[in-house]
Length: 199
Image (cartoon, rainbow, N blue to C red):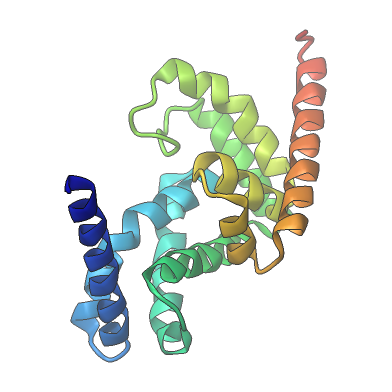
């Protein structure tokens, strides 16, 4: 019985959010509620891609500005809405990282902070941040699309079919894209280790 109540509660929440999405097309207060509901997830994703809190905040603002502008064209339910926001965020981050200078700046910022900016996980220890430093730097050397698929799969913990929907492609393409991205990441990490004489 308790399980059924929980399921009903989830269904009610989804229905409430479906209504909120419709209202937000013409009501700024309803959009503000959607913003509060989804801000943390979108910001965390941007931070995990950009590794800089201030840049992530700026890009997150762009994401919600675009979402507000395009909301009337959105078709779907509350679950589709989350993926739609991830798609906008992925494009916004990729646009930001498209220039070589911005990618180089991001890698330099990581090296300067030595993992001190806990944008990946607020609860992470300094030791874990230090261990993740080479991964952060290697990730930023990859193409933006490869960064997207790795971050969505391993940091956001989304399923392949959800990632495929966000990226606007079929799951088989996403699977092979993820495989190539991981291969590139491994090569980059090996090259970095060789450079520093690590085994």
